[in-house]
Image 1 (cartoon, rainbow, N blue to C red):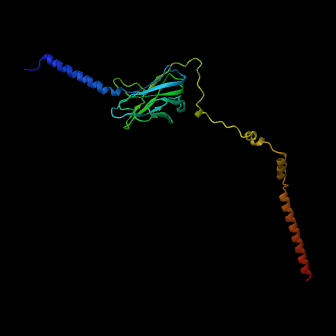
Image 2 (image 1 turned 135 degrees about the horizontal axis):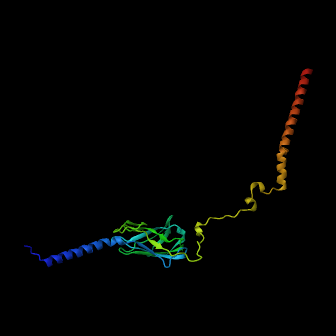
Image 3 (image 1 turned 30 degrees about the horizontal axis):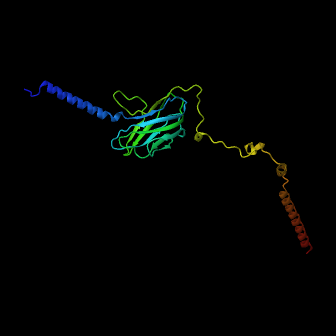
Length: 246
């Protein structure tokens, strides 16, 4: 005969159920962490918009030290300026976006920072893929654009929903760093085709002399050659006459 009564058994099962539920919640909590981005009244083509990012921690052993953001199409690294963030953190532009980082945030604490974007692109939503680095070298990759499967948390990229552009809003000119450089011609003649460049009268006269073969140096050389031939011929006839006389 069992020593446990029905009520006692029910209490034990209830306690086990509560503990199992608490354990599952505790284990699932870290996986729900992610990176969020917010902006007040964000709309397409809005200018000088402040974006507030919050990177939740998933580690109880190391602090967050760096966040690398891959910018969506339509926002260039030069369009982003740092506004505020954890003490000692700085922003550095990269080929595909920017990084913000510095001394590690306290273990167990989230990292929050803000940047200002020169102008948002004409879009319905923007994804800011983020790589989150900890002081122990761990990297969380918040880069997924698709919704996670049912029952899975996934690693979604921070998404910012945009309102339609305000009436009359237009794309701003490219950032100064992206503008092509323009160089003024050094002189009017330099910008003209070679066959239309001006020629002075003296140059034209010299060119005409060179074209018709009346170069002074060439004439002098021909005279010297002719005189040498005449002199040589006279010397040869005189020598021959002396030989015949002898």
